[in-house]
Length: 80
Image (tube, rainbow, N blue to C red; front, side):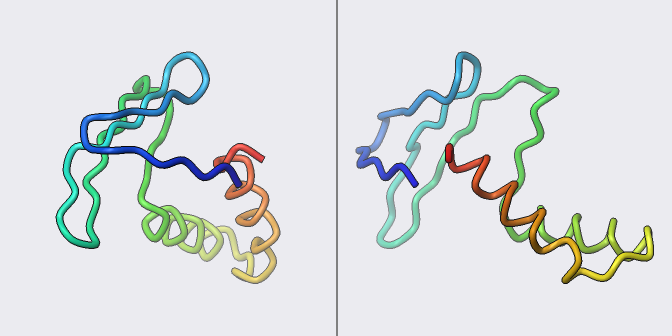
């Protein structure tokens, strides 16, 4: 995992077309802005996991059977 330190109004760039900007810091909460092409899905992790679980239920697959997939996708999104 790559760990970066950023201040308000600073950004990081992912690939050529995704940027993440620190919009606000209020105590232990950080507000991020993500600028990505429309074809790149961007979700909060808990929403993404809920989508995976719902898709697995609809497909008749047990959530634990896709836990490896979730871990792999998380690594890919983290830049590993």
